[in-house]
Amino acid sequence: MIHEIAHIRIKPDSKQAFEAAVKAAEWHFRVAKGCRSFRLERTIEDSLAYRLVVGWDSVEDHMVTFRATEGFAEWRALTAPHFAEPPEVYHVELVLTGF
Image 1 (cartoon, rainbow, N blue to C red):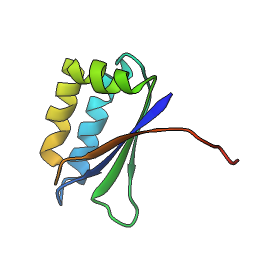
Image 2 (tube, helix red, strand yellow; image 1 turned 90 degrees about the vertical axis):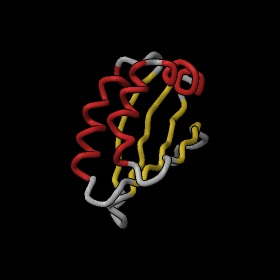
Image 3 (cartoon, helix red, strand yellow; image 1 turned 90 degrees about the horizontal axis):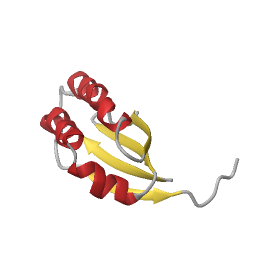
Image 4 (cartoon, helix red, strand yellow; image 1 turned 120 degrees about the vertical axis):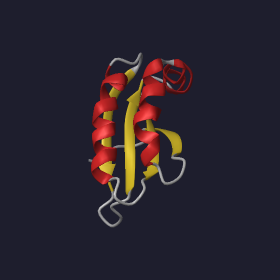
């Protein structure tokens, strides 16, 4: 399994609306092929900065399969109006778990 990490910066005064939009879009990830987990984290030091962490079976499940779905289009329609800038997205794989 890999994780998609998206650093998202939202517009001022969008916190409640953005978080509600992500909650509304969660279903599209839940039913997506290869999607295993989904969470949104808010930065404590900067309340306009978020990190979306999505577990996928593969990069292809995210970048090819999911991005071609109506679910991805709906995710973007719900959340993009709150973005202050385009999200920075990358993929990671687990190398080590210390404890």
